[in-house]
Image (tube, rainbow, N blue to C red; front, side):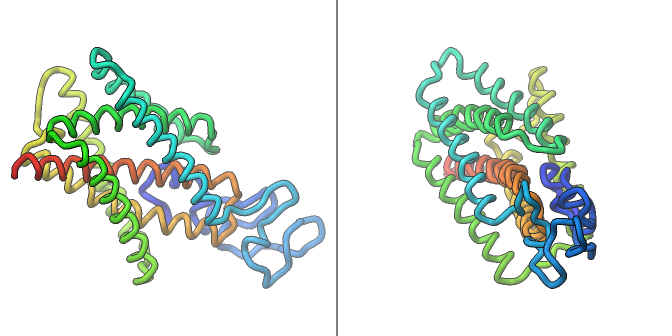
Length: 279
């Protein structure tokens, strides 16, 4: 089963029944010749993490994902804070566009990489932080209240926490049909945003990314899709841990979660701003 998040979708480590944990191992989710001479894996009946373990690597754990995701998000927040306070007014627009374009380019490179480069991931986090810092400051100034950024951060944390709790408590099963539906909807939504961005470069405004009723509608759709993507990401990470994905795949998981959480934050911030502006 594949995640709609192209970051996790790129690696077979998050797809049971596809790929291999290490050279010589059976595909994920399929029985292998564990315990045979020269394999270097545990014997039958041992936990999957021990079955996939080798001398020069170890399976990914939940702690690995949490630590690497925290580091990546911390870089995003730090870059956003620096952009908010340090970038002069004369450079706000170029820095905003540069952060958006560089972040998008690096996201594409990382998404289609077989192995995530931590340094490149940090560069992405910096670019994304610059974009978010300047964008958040613009919205805060438009509303006239900088506390809206804090509210959006808290809303993102609560939404992500409730999504994870719902996924675990109700034991949500991610089916192939659900995955396809979210994938198609996400790709379609991203395509519309890309077309809207290109049109804006020629001075054509559609209102999709604006602060009006149409902007509110698309921000709500974006937030909803982000929640669905979080469910898929949680499921793929759980499957990766269960089937012994290599430890370095935790960077891919961190990247995928960062992309989704940043997307969720930006849409929630816009929703709060538009509702505040209309009140």
